[in-house]
Length: 116
Image: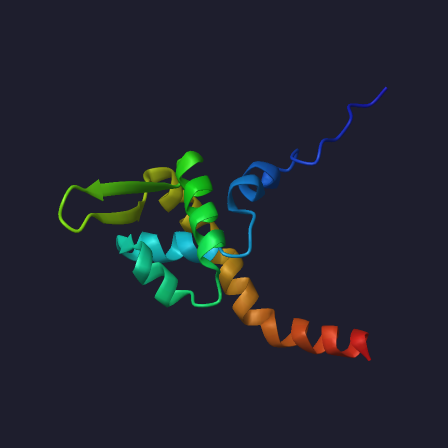
């Protein structure tokens, strides 16, 4: 009897588990460029709700993709930056981002045709 193929057999499963979510790839890209404060991330991604931003940042920190540093100042300051693991994932996503840019118009046209 053949070996049963699991959904993560191709290696994408673990990657999608940590990057799954509408905003995570964008947030990772932003904190890979430079450390960012919460308010700055909120301004850079205005369509994300505060609740979802907090949730994604917590999940990404728990997964080891980003580091949250608290500066004990008045007022308190928190910065998010990419970890080595996060940087490696962001770099792995670059070819996918290029593919998306290259084919975005074609995909949008096909979806419009399918909706008609």
